[in-house]
Every structure is written in structure tokens, then in C-alpha cells.
Amino acid sequence: MASDLPLSKEANGLPLSNRIVSITSQGHTATFQLYDTVAAMEFYAQLPLNLLLSNFRDAQWMFYPPQRLSVTTREAYHDGVKGELSYYAPWGDAFMLYRDFHARDEMHRLGIALSGADEIQPMAGNAVIQQVEPKVFKGETAMHITVTSKGNAVVYVLNDSGASKSLYTQLPMTVDVENYGGIEKIFYPPKKLNTTDTPLVKGANAGTLAYYAPWGDVVMFYARFGSAAGLYELGHVVSGREHIQDLSGTIRIEKDDK
Image (cartoon, rainbow, N blue to C red):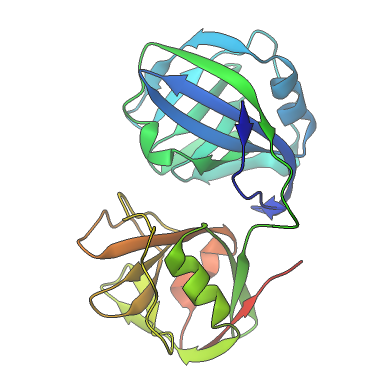
């Protein structure tokens, strides 16, 4: 099995590897890019696996790899977002989040969703977990953008849609940002985006980057929203999610080619 999805270089302050895994259950598949950590490498080395899924607090599907993983403090976190693949060391379970989730105990990051984050919730029963071979890209890398305001930076990775490419080709730009509805920051690119081959948002979460075609504005969510007619998905945050809510005044948006 091979993937031609664009890969990111880092997320949440951790480097990402070129190791990709797919998890399939009940005809639903989610694909994850693993971090460049010992625990993620140990998980990858155990594949393929066929394991029973267990639901936890209607927010995650968990399963138990045969061998425990060697996590470290640098991968630890408490506030998880939809689409994360993680590990809970006290129980020895790996899990996929289909809702944002806060835990008092430390969770440890294993990977981020490349595709199929909306496919996690309807999974049930057994899951097939396997390695996915990344295709060789013809010089193509994922499109990253940086939004800067008052010394704070928010980095997004864009999907491979028409609207994302329309936004990317207009950069750099300096625009005013507005708060809307207490859950999002919005700005208006000079030209409207082409929504051809662009997926609709099925469930916006903190960190979702979207385009609302009826108004022609780009939306940076800092809280959960859901979906709306004409709301298209552009990408998701990879670092600086905590700064989105504080964006104000004039912001600078640039290509991030690091």
C-alpha cells in the first residue's frame, strides 16, 4: 500500500518522520504520519496488527499493541485534538481521537492524521493497522503557511485542494484580522479562492483552517464549531494553536518553505 499524500516536517514542536500507517475498521480508514520518536518507531516496527478497538469516553478508539512503547517527556501533552494518534503509558494502549480531549494524566504523541480524521468515529470492532509506503514526490512538498501577529506565529499545513492553492499563490499578504462569534478569526484575501476539488468542512475544531465561500473570508478556528454550507477545508494547524485566539489588528501571512 502506498500514499501520495503530502508530508509535513514537524507538528506540535516535534519532528515528523516519513513513516505512515493506516488504520481500517468497518470500511473506514484513517491514515497517520508518525513522529520521529523512539515510541513511534517501536509502534511502526510491530505492524501489521489486527486488534480489537475499545471506545473511551466517546472521544477515542483505543487498542493495545503487543509490546509497550518507550515514551519520553518531550512527547507528553494533556490537550488532544481530533485526528491525533497517541499512547497512554499507564495502560499500554494506543488511541485515535475523534473529538478534542483533555486528560489530567499525560498522554504521549505518536502521529497526526494525514487523511480520514472524520472516518475514526464510525469505526468499531477489529481494526487492521499496517504500514503505508510513501510514494516518491516529484519535488513536491506540503504547503505550509505562517500567520504572524505581534511576535507570535501560527503555522498551518494546507491540503492539496484548489482553494488552498489559490490562497498559497497570493502569498505573502498583510491583512486585517477580525474576531467572529467568539470561536474564530477571519481575514479576507485580495482574490476569492477557487473551491474546485476542495472538501467541505465536516467538523471544525480548534486549529482548523477553512474558507467560507459566501463571504470570501479565510477562517482560523480556535474553538470547536461543526460545519456549515459553503465552508471549505484548507488545512490544519501544526504549531502555535494557542496563539490563534490572540490574533488581532494586522497580520502577516507568508509561505513557510522550511
